[in-house]
Image (cartoon, rainbow, N blue to C red):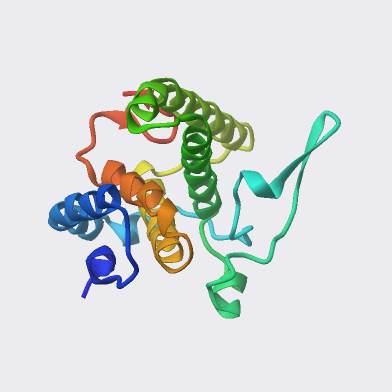
Length: 207
């Protein structure tokens, strides 16, 4: 069994739409695994930096304090063991966590505002545009900060893999706790599994 088999093996009931999303994701499994296996870990890690990291970085962990921001709760993801949360790793894990949080914010707003499937489709045009712009602004600020410190820009393929890893964690969590939300990580994984279209992940801009 692979991680991508989780949706088909879950015993918890899910909505028909979520089941269809799970089937689409499973249809993309081979291509997704090829993408992961083709990733040159040794080459990328040779020039990568490991550090302490937040471990559960999302919008809910960022508080606005006057004209500044305060980041809270550095305990890491509750489902991961202490040794894993304590280990040093790429800071891109936190970047990926925030990117996934933007996706959740989009769908949270849609779930609150849309009263029927047709309205959700209509409102998602603006919501998807918001997510694209926020991703671009966040990643652009991150890259600019790295450049100011003399650091190299992040590796796009590695960031995409960390996003996949985070979305798989979310999928397991939603299947066990909130099946009404399982479509969010499923659709996120579908987008990440899709063939690349020349988008620069690190800047959120077309190459």
